[in-house]
Length: 166
Image (cartoon, rainbow, N blue to C red):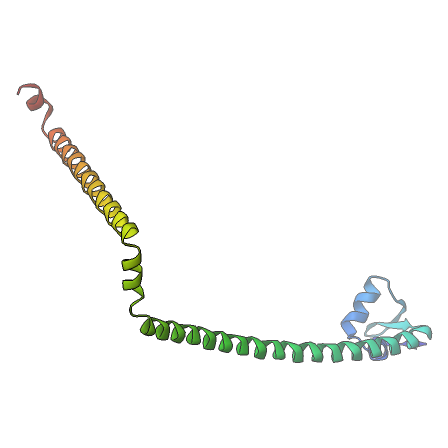
């Protein structure tokens, strides 16, 4: 059958621009007729494309249906993620409340630990004292180095001839 561009587009369920592109790429058989206003393209579409057309229509319908299902499933996923976040916040609140109740019930926990393990605690206290001394020594060394560097800088600010003729 022979169609105009508009008729071919309607017959194949595509846009007129698609038909024009197919003409340009020589994917469709066509005849160019001269008219006083310019040229008209007549497209020859074999009858076998009618069956392809119906196949395309059913596949398009299937795609539309599949797209609707995808949108529905995405919405379900969003709601499930929101539920998950809500349940996670509830769980963290429960854990926090459980810790608070355990802490209030176990007031003597620290005293039991300290009483049963006095040796390790004294060793930890000794280690803390040693670390504090090391920290103080290192901070003193750093301060002296900084003061020396400061003095060196002030010496450098003295003119060269004063440094030579001291």
